[in-house]
Length: 189
Image: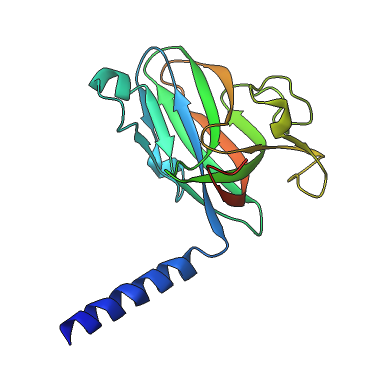
């Protein structure tokens, strides 16, 4: 009897968690500096959070890398704002990716990426300038872009990145419009 009850609870929990995430996916904005320490300002970033990279073993190096876990819709564009600062003048690497998954690629669109307190080149992905990503990831289709005709489509291992110069102690607000695209097995070609 107890086995049936536990099985029923597990089944209900699985169904509810699947329902709760229907229409949603996950994206990431990661930030990295070679010198100094990054600080995340949660009070100014709304419901979104960042944490230090737990997979980096060295404590000092870990504080140079912030990562986020962004739950976003696959039905509409979601604006995300993350506020950071650094203890030293630095080149901040902003990386756009889909959420990591052991077996799946989480494809995510990004568009209209800006940085208040720094300068982003080509924020709307209308051209390839300013960003590092594979040419095949640039999407030039008005029906898929948030604004204009361009967006970028990324997953964890095929991100898009750009360096921006930031000043010690000054807050930088990185904003992006994100929309989840799809999930597919990593072994799919």
